[in-house]
Image 1: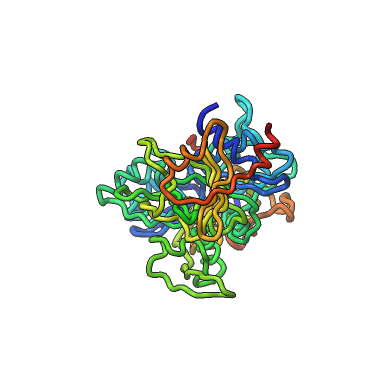
Image 2 (image 1 turned 90 degrees about the vertical axis):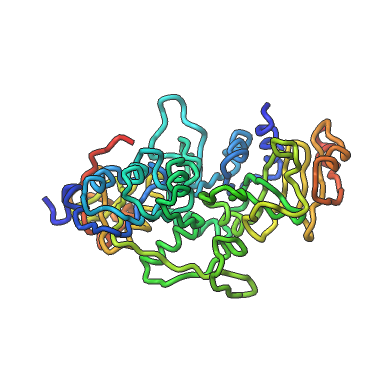
Length: 222
Length: 218
């Protein structure tokens, strides 16, 4: 046993009502499905704000949390493919903050890097940046976008060592390494935990100082 | 060949060899079928440079998809990266060509492709980032909407995706270039004449037909 390793239920037990969670994944690819299942059974996990590119798929992944009525607000770039999100939004039970995907990723990266905000051209002149401060830099117009942080990040990696160093699998990487830097508590779901010294230092994408808790994946089928 | 495939095949002619190319969802996904994958590098915003062909039956890897969430393969020389790095590539001008779909194109070549008035706006994805960041943007669209109304309009009634005009507009019937704040008709598809294009295009446009391409085909 290692100090960082916990059961999924123990790992999510500190999530409070109204918490803001970052959840990795692009749809279900690279989503921490074991941790999401554990959140469903944690009684304090409700009125959640979820920062994730999508809200899972209908009835799958984060889509289940939505159907359970646990999500108050979703922050992400693309929800159109989940009719449950569209319905919940129209019924008024779900607030949605739509963010261009690159701005979402950069706001998380910045949040993890101690940066308050950044200027981007993305979304300039569209309703998605209405009211945002504009500035001309080297002759180009930019809009200010604030960084984002969360109380808890639930991420999915492939292999951890006992210190919490992480490697990822192909396009299951997506938002996970960024989110691993930007929350007060970072919980990583992994396929295996190997002894320290086993991972090639050149292959480690997320160094262990970002990771608080490791949970072995039950490889919940999507 | 479907109308979408026909548009995709016409768009490929505007992608130079050696380019780093990002393909949007919809008609642009058909472009991959017509691209020589050994002479371009496909970038997908969910974190892969070097997208290969669709895997064979039973060979799909659940951890390996493109931005449309469909299974793909990775070519030799491919690399994986996080979302923030992927969009640094896009916004930072490191992607040569983006091929996007559109709901409307306006008379200056700006496009609307993320929201429909009166419907809930719940998806934008990477479209706004690609439009501001890709060096060249090619938009692929049917020339008219399902009800027959022009999609290339004088003023967009849908919200624009960005202030930046695209570079090339490719439909099944014609190709336009956006230049100096206006549209220029540069190509006609086989069997299409200028009168057809005028009748089915709401935006004004100049005409400078590129005869070299037609001559090369003949």
